[in-house]
Image (cartoon, rainbow, N blue to C red; front, side, top):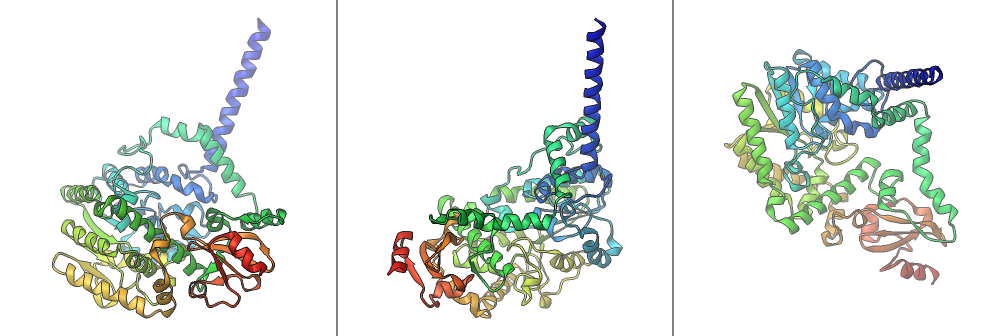
Length: 482
Protein backbone atom coordinates (compact mmCIF):
# COMPACT_ATOMS: atom_id res chain seq x y z
CA UNK A 1 0.00 0.00 0.00
CA UNK A 2 2.80 2.37 0.86
CA UNK A 3 4.43 1.83 -2.51
CA UNK A 4 1.14 2.54 -4.29
CA UNK A 5 0.66 5.71 -2.31
CA UNK A 6 4.22 6.73 -2.99
CA UNK A 7 3.71 6.18 -6.71
CA UNK A 8 0.51 8.23 -6.66
CA UNK A 9 2.29 11.04 -4.82
CA UNK A 10 5.17 10.97 -7.31
CA UNK A 11 2.79 10.94 -10.31
CA UNK A 12 0.81 13.81 -8.78
CA UNK A 13 3.99 15.82 -8.18
CA UNK A 14 5.23 15.15 -11.73
CA UNK A 15 1.86 16.18 -13.19
CA UNK A 16 1.82 19.29 -11.03
CA UNK A 17 5.34 20.23 -12.07
CA UNK A 18 4.39 19.58 -15.70
CA UNK A 19 1.32 21.82 -15.46
CA UNK A 20 3.32 24.56 -13.79
CA UNK A 21 6.09 24.27 -16.38
CA UNK A 22 3.65 24.40 -19.32
CA UNK A 23 1.80 27.33 -17.74
CA UNK A 24 5.01 29.31 -17.15
CA UNK A 25 6.22 28.51 -20.67
CA UNK A 26 2.94 29.69 -22.25
CA UNK A 27 2.79 32.82 -20.10
CA UNK A 28 6.38 33.75 -21.00
CA UNK A 29 5.95 33.02 -24.71
CA UNK A 30 2.54 34.73 -24.57
CA UNK A 31 1.57 33.98 -28.20
CA UNK A 32 -1.54 36.20 -28.06
CA UNK A 33 0.02 39.08 -26.08
CA UNK A 34 -2.30 38.69 -23.10
CA UNK A 35 0.30 38.99 -20.33
CA UNK A 36 3.12 41.13 -21.81
CA UNK A 37 5.80 39.95 -19.37
CA UNK A 38 8.58 39.82 -21.98
CA UNK A 39 8.87 41.10 -25.54
CA UNK A 40 9.19 38.55 -28.30
CA UNK A 41 8.35 38.62 -31.99
CA UNK A 42 5.42 36.41 -32.97
CA UNK A 43 4.85 34.34 -36.11
CA UNK A 44 2.80 36.37 -38.60
CA UNK A 45 -0.18 34.00 -38.57
CA UNK A 46 -0.76 34.64 -34.86
CA UNK A 47 -1.90 38.17 -35.71
CA UNK A 48 -5.19 36.50 -36.64
CA UNK A 49 -5.69 35.97 -32.89
CA UNK A 50 -5.45 39.71 -32.22
CA UNK A 51 -9.17 39.81 -31.44
CA UNK A 52 -8.22 38.13 -28.14
CA UNK A 53 -5.42 40.63 -27.51
CA UNK A 54 -7.66 43.61 -28.20
CA UNK A 55 -10.61 42.42 -26.14
CA UNK A 56 -8.30 42.01 -23.14
CA UNK A 57 -6.37 45.20 -24.00
CA UNK A 58 -9.56 47.28 -23.91
CA UNK A 59 -10.35 45.91 -20.44
CA UNK A 60 -6.88 46.85 -19.17
CA UNK A 61 -6.43 50.16 -21.01
CA UNK A 62 -10.04 51.51 -20.87
CA UNK A 63 -9.20 54.00 -23.66
CA UNK A 64 -10.93 57.34 -24.13
CA UNK A 65 -10.30 57.32 -27.88
CA UNK A 66 -10.45 54.21 -30.00
CA UNK A 67 -9.96 53.18 -33.64
CA UNK A 68 -12.30 50.53 -35.00
CA UNK A 69 -12.47 48.63 -38.27
CA UNK A 70 -10.96 45.63 -40.01
CA UNK A 71 -7.36 44.58 -40.60
CA UNK A 72 -7.05 47.69 -42.78
CA UNK A 73 -7.33 49.89 -39.68
CA UNK A 74 -5.10 47.51 -37.75
CA UNK A 75 -2.44 47.71 -40.45
CA UNK A 76 -2.50 51.47 -41.05
CA UNK A 77 -1.90 52.94 -37.61
CA UNK A 78 1.13 52.04 -35.49
CA UNK A 79 -0.53 52.70 -32.16
CA UNK A 80 -1.09 50.68 -28.96
CA UNK A 81 -3.28 47.70 -29.81
CA UNK A 82 -2.07 47.32 -33.40
CA UNK A 83 -1.47 43.70 -34.44
CA UNK A 84 1.71 44.92 -36.12
CA UNK A 85 3.39 44.46 -32.77
CA UNK A 86 3.05 40.69 -33.31
CA UNK A 87 5.61 40.57 -36.08
CA UNK A 88 7.19 43.95 -36.79
CA UNK A 89 10.52 44.07 -35.00
CA UNK A 90 10.62 47.87 -35.40
CA UNK A 91 7.10 48.54 -34.11
CA UNK A 92 8.22 50.83 -31.29
CA UNK A 93 10.34 52.93 -33.64
CA UNK A 94 7.70 53.07 -36.38
CA UNK A 95 4.95 54.28 -34.06
CA UNK A 96 6.92 57.41 -33.10
CA UNK A 97 6.16 59.57 -36.20
CA UNK A 98 2.39 59.16 -35.87
CA UNK A 99 2.47 59.61 -32.11
CA UNK A 100 4.47 62.82 -32.44
CA UNK A 101 1.88 64.20 -34.89
CA UNK A 102 -1.12 63.37 -32.67
CA UNK A 103 0.60 63.88 -29.31
CA UNK A 104 -2.03 66.21 -27.79
CA UNK A 105 -4.70 63.54 -28.43
CA UNK A 106 -2.94 60.52 -26.89
CA UNK A 107 -3.67 57.87 -25.85
CA UNK A 108 -5.50 56.26 -28.77
CA UNK A 109 -6.12 52.51 -28.89
CA UNK A 110 -6.14 50.64 -32.21
CA UNK A 111 -8.91 48.03 -31.99
CA UNK A 112 -9.11 47.19 -35.70
CA UNK A 113 -9.83 43.46 -35.93
CA UNK A 114 -8.01 41.32 -38.49
CA UNK A 115 -10.67 39.43 -40.44
CA UNK A 116 -13.42 41.53 -38.88
CA UNK A 117 -16.39 43.23 -40.49
CA UNK A 118 -19.14 45.63 -39.49
CA UNK A 119 -20.42 43.18 -36.86
CA UNK A 120 -17.06 43.26 -35.02
CA UNK A 121 -16.99 47.06 -35.21
CA UNK A 122 -20.28 47.17 -33.28
CA UNK A 123 -19.23 44.45 -30.80
CA UNK A 124 -15.94 46.12 -29.91
CA UNK A 125 -17.57 49.56 -29.70
CA UNK A 126 -19.99 48.21 -27.09
CA UNK A 127 -17.12 46.45 -25.32
CA UNK A 128 -15.10 49.69 -25.18
CA UNK A 129 -18.07 51.61 -23.77
CA UNK A 130 -18.77 48.94 -21.14
CA UNK A 131 -15.20 49.35 -19.94
CA UNK A 132 -15.22 53.12 -20.10
CA UNK A 133 -18.60 54.89 -19.92
CA UNK A 134 -16.64 58.12 -20.46
CA UNK A 135 -15.52 56.95 -23.91
CA UNK A 136 -15.08 60.24 -25.75
CA UNK A 137 -14.16 59.61 -29.36
CA UNK A 138 -14.55 56.70 -31.74
CA UNK A 139 -12.98 56.70 -35.21
CA UNK A 140 -14.19 54.01 -37.61
CA UNK A 141 -12.57 53.07 -40.90
CA UNK A 142 -15.05 51.58 -43.36
CA UNK A 143 -14.29 49.98 -46.70
CA UNK A 144 -16.77 49.10 -49.41
CA UNK A 145 -16.01 45.38 -49.09
CA UNK A 146 -17.44 45.44 -45.56
CA UNK A 147 -20.81 46.11 -47.18
CA UNK A 148 -20.64 43.41 -49.82
CA UNK A 149 -21.37 39.74 -49.32
CA UNK A 150 -17.61 39.10 -49.51
CA UNK A 151 -17.68 40.44 -45.96
CA UNK A 152 -21.28 40.16 -44.78
CA UNK A 153 -22.82 41.34 -41.53
CA UNK A 154 -22.37 38.08 -39.62
CA UNK A 155 -19.57 37.49 -37.07
CA UNK A 156 -16.19 36.87 -38.71
CA UNK A 157 -14.11 36.12 -35.64
CA UNK A 158 -15.04 33.84 -32.71
CA UNK A 159 -17.30 35.38 -30.10
CA UNK A 160 -15.29 35.21 -26.89
CA UNK A 161 -16.65 35.33 -23.32
CA UNK A 162 -14.47 38.30 -22.42
CA UNK A 163 -16.42 40.66 -24.74
CA UNK A 164 -18.76 42.92 -22.80
CA UNK A 165 -17.05 42.23 -19.48
CA UNK A 166 -15.09 44.75 -17.42
CA UNK A 167 -12.70 42.10 -16.10
CA UNK A 168 -10.92 39.05 -17.50
CA UNK A 169 -12.52 35.89 -16.11
CA UNK A 170 -10.09 33.45 -14.49
CA UNK A 171 -11.28 30.55 -16.73
CA UNK A 172 -10.35 32.65 -19.77
CA UNK A 173 -6.79 33.09 -18.50
CA UNK A 174 -6.54 29.40 -17.61
CA UNK A 175 -7.74 28.45 -21.08
CA UNK A 176 -5.03 30.62 -22.57
CA UNK A 177 -2.07 29.28 -20.68
CA UNK A 178 -2.96 25.60 -20.38
CA UNK A 179 -4.56 24.43 -23.63
CA UNK A 180 -2.73 22.36 -26.24
CA UNK A 181 -3.42 25.01 -28.90
CA UNK A 182 -1.77 27.73 -26.83
CA UNK A 183 1.19 25.45 -26.05
CA UNK A 184 1.67 24.75 -29.74
CA UNK A 185 1.50 28.47 -30.58
CA UNK A 186 3.98 29.13 -27.78
CA UNK A 187 6.31 26.57 -29.33
CA UNK A 188 5.97 28.32 -32.71
CA UNK A 189 6.77 31.63 -31.01
CA UNK A 190 9.90 30.15 -29.43
CA UNK A 191 10.97 28.62 -32.76
CA UNK A 192 10.30 31.89 -34.57
CA UNK A 193 12.61 33.75 -32.21
CA UNK A 194 15.27 31.03 -32.40
CA UNK A 195 15.68 30.48 -36.15
CA UNK A 196 17.31 32.58 -38.80
CA UNK A 197 14.12 34.13 -40.23
CA UNK A 198 15.86 35.34 -43.40
CA UNK A 199 17.15 31.84 -44.08
CA UNK A 200 13.68 30.39 -43.46
CA UNK A 201 12.07 32.82 -45.91
CA UNK A 202 14.70 32.01 -48.52
CA UNK A 203 13.97 28.29 -48.12
CA UNK A 204 10.25 28.91 -48.64
CA UNK A 205 10.96 30.96 -51.76
CA UNK A 206 13.10 28.31 -53.40
CA UNK A 207 11.56 25.01 -52.36
CA UNK A 208 9.29 24.81 -55.40
CA UNK A 209 12.23 25.31 -57.75
CA UNK A 210 14.11 22.47 -56.03
CA UNK A 211 11.04 20.29 -56.38
CA UNK A 212 10.92 21.00 -60.10
CA UNK A 213 14.63 20.36 -60.62
CA UNK A 214 14.32 16.98 -58.93
CA UNK A 215 11.77 15.97 -61.55
CA UNK A 216 13.65 17.24 -64.56
CA UNK A 217 12.05 14.77 -66.96
CA UNK A 218 8.53 15.97 -66.21
CA UNK A 219 6.84 19.36 -66.56
CA UNK A 220 5.74 20.36 -63.04
CA UNK A 221 2.93 22.88 -62.65
CA UNK A 222 3.47 25.32 -59.80
CA UNK A 223 0.12 26.21 -58.27
CA UNK A 224 -1.06 29.84 -57.94
CA UNK A 225 -0.95 29.38 -54.16
CA UNK A 226 2.71 28.48 -54.38
CA UNK A 227 3.35 31.44 -56.65
CA UNK A 228 1.68 33.94 -54.33
CA UNK A 229 3.29 32.59 -51.17
CA UNK A 230 6.73 31.64 -52.28
CA UNK A 231 7.95 32.95 -55.61
CA UNK A 232 8.30 36.20 -57.45
CA UNK A 233 5.75 36.40 -60.22
CA UNK A 234 7.03 35.28 -63.60
CA UNK A 235 5.00 38.12 -65.18
CA UNK A 236 5.60 41.42 -63.40
CA UNK A 237 4.69 45.07 -63.55
CA UNK A 238 7.32 47.75 -63.01
CA UNK A 239 8.23 46.81 -59.45
CA UNK A 240 7.35 44.24 -56.80
CA UNK A 241 4.80 46.34 -54.92
CA UNK A 242 3.01 47.42 -58.10
CA UNK A 243 2.89 43.79 -59.26
CA UNK A 244 1.31 42.60 -56.00
CA UNK A 245 -1.27 45.38 -56.03
CA UNK A 246 -2.15 44.73 -59.69
CA UNK A 247 -2.78 41.01 -59.23
CA UNK A 248 -4.73 41.60 -56.04
CA UNK A 249 -6.91 44.23 -57.75
CA UNK A 250 -7.68 41.96 -60.70
CA UNK A 251 -8.53 39.04 -58.42
CA UNK A 252 -10.75 41.16 -56.19
CA UNK A 253 -12.47 42.96 -59.07
CA UNK A 254 -13.21 39.66 -60.78
CA UNK A 255 -14.59 38.24 -57.53
CA UNK A 256 -16.94 41.20 -57.06
CA UNK A 257 -18.22 40.82 -60.61
CA UNK A 258 -18.88 37.12 -60.03
CA UNK A 259 -20.91 37.91 -56.92
CA UNK A 260 -22.90 40.50 -58.81
CA UNK A 261 -23.71 37.93 -61.51
CA UNK A 262 -24.70 35.28 -58.98
CA UNK A 263 -26.59 37.29 -56.37
CA UNK A 264 -27.51 40.64 -57.88
CA UNK A 265 -26.94 44.23 -56.67
CA UNK A 266 -27.57 43.43 -52.99
CA UNK A 267 -24.34 41.45 -52.98
CA UNK A 268 -22.39 44.67 -53.59
CA UNK A 269 -24.46 47.00 -51.39
CA UNK A 270 -25.60 44.81 -48.52
CA UNK A 271 -28.65 46.32 -46.71
CA UNK A 272 -28.07 44.15 -43.63
CA UNK A 273 -24.61 45.64 -43.14
CA UNK A 274 -26.05 49.15 -43.57
CA UNK A 275 -28.57 48.34 -40.84
CA UNK A 276 -25.77 47.48 -38.43
CA UNK A 277 -24.02 50.75 -39.27
CA UNK A 278 -27.24 52.57 -38.37
CA UNK A 279 -27.22 50.78 -35.01
CA UNK A 280 -23.64 51.97 -34.46
CA UNK A 281 -24.69 55.56 -35.17
CA UNK A 282 -27.68 55.29 -32.85
CA UNK A 283 -25.58 53.75 -30.06
CA UNK A 284 -22.98 56.52 -30.31
CA UNK A 285 -25.61 59.26 -30.17
CA UNK A 286 -27.34 57.62 -27.21
CA UNK A 287 -24.07 57.38 -25.26
CA UNK A 288 -22.84 60.87 -26.29
CA UNK A 289 -19.77 59.48 -28.01
CA UNK A 290 -18.16 61.63 -30.67
CA UNK A 291 -18.04 59.55 -33.82
CA UNK A 292 -15.93 60.06 -36.93
CA UNK A 293 -16.20 57.72 -39.89
CA UNK A 294 -13.88 57.66 -42.86
CA UNK A 295 -13.82 55.66 -46.08
CA UNK A 296 -10.58 53.71 -46.15
CA UNK A 297 -8.26 54.68 -48.99
CA UNK A 298 -7.60 51.99 -51.57
CA UNK A 299 -5.07 51.97 -54.37
CA UNK A 300 -6.10 53.64 -57.63
CA UNK A 301 -5.32 50.30 -59.33
CA UNK A 302 -8.15 48.73 -57.35
CA UNK A 303 -10.59 51.37 -58.61
CA UNK A 304 -9.35 50.86 -62.18
CA UNK A 305 -10.03 47.15 -61.85
CA UNK A 306 -13.48 47.84 -60.36
CA UNK A 307 -14.27 50.05 -63.34
CA UNK A 308 -12.92 47.52 -65.86
CA UNK A 309 -15.03 44.75 -64.33
CA UNK A 310 -18.14 46.93 -64.33
CA UNK A 311 -18.66 47.12 -60.56
CA UNK A 312 -17.50 50.69 -59.85
CA UNK A 313 -21.05 52.14 -60.11
CA UNK A 314 -22.02 49.98 -57.13
CA UNK A 315 -19.25 51.55 -55.09
CA UNK A 316 -20.68 54.97 -55.93
CA UNK A 317 -24.12 53.70 -54.90
CA UNK A 318 -22.62 52.60 -51.58
CA UNK A 319 -21.20 56.11 -51.05
CA UNK A 320 -24.70 57.52 -51.52
CA UNK A 321 -26.24 54.99 -49.13
CA UNK A 322 -23.52 55.63 -46.57
CA UNK A 323 -24.07 59.38 -46.44
CA UNK A 324 -27.80 58.85 -45.78
CA UNK A 325 -26.74 57.26 -42.49
CA UNK A 326 -23.73 59.37 -41.55
CA UNK A 327 -21.33 61.96 -42.95
CA UNK A 328 -17.83 60.64 -43.55
CA UNK A 329 -14.28 61.62 -44.35
CA UNK A 330 -12.71 60.74 -47.70
CA UNK A 331 -8.99 60.89 -48.54
CA UNK A 332 -9.04 59.57 -52.11
CA UNK A 333 -7.65 62.74 -53.66
CA UNK A 334 -4.62 62.75 -51.37
CA UNK A 335 -4.04 58.98 -51.21
CA UNK A 336 -5.98 56.72 -53.65
CA UNK A 337 -5.13 58.81 -56.72
CA UNK A 338 -1.88 60.29 -55.48
CA UNK A 339 1.02 60.61 -57.91
CA UNK A 340 3.09 59.00 -55.17
CA UNK A 341 0.74 56.07 -54.63
CA UNK A 342 3.65 53.72 -53.90
CA UNK A 343 4.23 55.71 -50.72
CA UNK A 344 0.90 54.56 -49.28
CA UNK A 345 0.49 50.94 -50.44
CA UNK A 346 3.20 48.29 -50.37
CA UNK A 347 1.44 44.93 -49.98
CA UNK A 348 -1.98 44.90 -51.61
CA UNK A 349 -4.61 47.32 -52.90
CA UNK A 350 -6.64 47.53 -49.69
CA UNK A 351 -4.20 47.74 -46.78
CA UNK A 352 -2.71 51.23 -46.68
CA UNK A 353 0.40 51.73 -44.59
CA UNK A 354 1.51 54.07 -41.83
CA UNK A 355 2.24 56.91 -44.29
CA UNK A 356 -1.45 57.05 -45.14
CA UNK A 357 -2.31 56.77 -41.44
CA UNK A 358 -0.23 59.90 -40.88
CA UNK A 359 -2.50 61.75 -43.34
CA UNK A 360 -5.81 60.37 -42.08
CA UNK A 361 -5.63 60.53 -38.30
CA UNK A 362 -4.35 64.12 -37.80
CA UNK A 363 -6.98 65.49 -40.23
CA UNK A 364 -9.80 63.76 -38.36
CA UNK A 365 -8.53 64.66 -34.90
CA UNK A 366 -8.08 68.30 -35.85
CA UNK A 367 -11.28 68.41 -37.91
CA UNK A 368 -9.43 69.90 -40.88
CA UNK A 369 -10.83 69.22 -44.33
CA UNK A 370 -9.09 70.46 -47.45
CA UNK A 371 -10.84 69.41 -50.71
CA UNK A 372 -8.09 71.05 -52.75
CA UNK A 373 -5.62 68.62 -51.18
CA UNK A 374 -7.90 65.62 -51.45
CA UNK A 375 -9.36 65.63 -47.93
CA UNK A 376 -13.16 65.94 -48.03
CA UNK A 377 -15.85 65.75 -45.38
CA UNK A 378 -18.82 64.31 -47.27
CA UNK A 379 -22.41 65.18 -46.32
CA UNK A 380 -25.79 64.86 -48.01
CA UNK A 381 -25.30 68.40 -49.35
CA UNK A 382 -22.05 67.76 -51.21
CA UNK A 383 -22.16 64.02 -51.91
CA UNK A 384 -23.04 64.30 -55.61
CA UNK A 385 -20.38 66.91 -56.35
CA UNK A 386 -17.90 64.82 -54.39
CA UNK A 387 -18.74 61.62 -56.33
CA UNK A 388 -18.37 63.50 -59.64
CA UNK A 389 -15.02 64.90 -58.51
CA UNK A 390 -13.86 61.47 -57.40
CA UNK A 391 -14.86 59.96 -60.74
CA UNK A 392 -12.88 62.61 -62.61
CA UNK A 393 -9.85 61.90 -60.43
CA UNK A 394 -10.13 58.24 -61.35
CA UNK A 395 -10.31 59.10 -65.06
CA UNK A 396 -7.24 61.33 -64.72
CA UNK A 397 -5.46 58.56 -62.86
CA UNK A 398 -6.21 56.19 -65.76
CA UNK A 399 -5.27 58.63 -68.51
CA UNK A 400 -2.02 59.80 -66.92
CA UNK A 401 -0.39 56.37 -66.80
CA UNK A 402 0.22 54.94 -70.27
CA UNK A 403 1.59 51.68 -68.88
CA UNK A 404 -1.55 50.66 -67.03
CA UNK A 405 -3.81 52.31 -69.54
CA UNK A 406 -2.60 49.78 -72.13
CA UNK A 407 -2.76 46.88 -69.67
CA UNK A 408 -6.38 47.52 -68.73
CA UNK A 409 -7.42 48.17 -72.32
CA UNK A 410 -6.02 44.77 -73.35
CA UNK A 411 -7.40 42.80 -70.39
CA UNK A 412 -10.44 40.71 -71.16
CA UNK A 413 -12.61 40.48 -68.00
CA UNK A 414 -14.32 37.38 -69.37
CA UNK A 415 -10.97 35.57 -69.11
CA UNK A 416 -10.86 36.12 -65.35
CA UNK A 417 -12.91 35.06 -62.35
CA UNK A 418 -12.44 34.94 -58.59
CA UNK A 419 -10.50 31.70 -59.16
CA UNK A 420 -6.76 32.30 -58.70
CA UNK A 421 -6.00 30.08 -61.70
CA UNK A 422 -7.52 32.71 -63.98
CA UNK A 423 -5.58 35.64 -62.52
CA UNK A 424 -2.04 34.60 -61.62
CA UNK A 425 0.47 33.29 -64.16
CA UNK A 426 1.03 29.58 -63.56
CA UNK A 427 4.59 28.58 -64.47
CA UNK A 428 5.78 25.12 -65.41
CA UNK A 429 9.16 23.77 -64.39
CA UNK A 430 11.79 23.06 -65.55
CA UNK A 431 12.54 25.05 -68.69
CA UNK A 432 11.93 23.34 -72.03
CA UNK A 433 14.58 23.85 -74.73
CA UNK A 434 15.53 27.25 -73.29
CA UNK A 435 11.88 28.36 -73.02
CA UNK A 436 9.87 29.17 -69.93
CA UNK A 437 6.27 27.99 -70.25
CA UNK A 438 3.41 29.43 -68.22
CA UNK A 439 -0.35 29.66 -68.37
CA UNK A 440 -1.69 33.21 -68.28
CA UNK A 441 -5.17 34.56 -68.96
CA UNK A 442 -6.37 31.21 -70.36
CA UNK A 443 -3.44 30.96 -72.79
CA UNK A 444 -0.27 28.88 -72.66
CA UNK A 445 2.74 31.07 -73.37
CA UNK A 446 6.39 30.23 -74.04
CA UNK A 447 9.16 32.83 -73.90
CA UNK A 448 12.93 32.58 -73.94
CA UNK A 449 14.10 31.73 -70.45
CA UNK A 450 16.86 34.34 -70.40
CA UNK A 451 14.25 37.12 -70.72
CA UNK A 452 12.49 36.22 -67.45
CA UNK A 453 10.83 37.75 -65.51
CA UNK A 454 8.51 39.07 -68.19
CA UNK A 455 6.87 42.46 -68.34
CA UNK A 456 3.08 42.41 -67.87
CA UNK A 457 2.33 44.94 -70.61
CA UNK A 458 4.67 43.34 -73.13
CA UNK A 459 3.16 39.89 -72.51
CA UNK A 460 -0.38 41.18 -73.03
CA UNK A 461 0.57 43.10 -76.16
CA UNK A 462 2.74 40.28 -77.57
CA UNK A 463 5.82 42.49 -77.82
CA UNK A 464 8.39 39.75 -77.25
CA UNK A 465 10.58 38.12 -79.88
CA UNK A 466 10.03 34.37 -80.29
CA UNK A 467 6.86 34.49 -78.21
CA UNK A 468 4.75 31.35 -78.69
CA UNK A 469 1.08 31.03 -77.70
CA UNK A 470 -1.13 27.94 -77.61
CA UNK A 471 -4.37 26.59 -76.24
CA UNK A 472 -2.65 23.79 -74.31
CA UNK A 473 0.70 22.79 -72.87
CA UNK A 474 1.17 20.19 -75.59
CA UNK A 475 0.43 22.69 -78.33
CA UNK A 476 2.94 25.25 -77.12
CA UNK A 477 5.60 22.55 -76.58
CA UNK A 478 4.99 21.34 -80.14
CA UNK A 479 5.55 24.89 -81.40
CA UNK A 480 8.86 24.99 -79.54
CA UNK A 481 9.84 21.66 -81.16
CA UNK A 482 9.17 23.14 -84.60
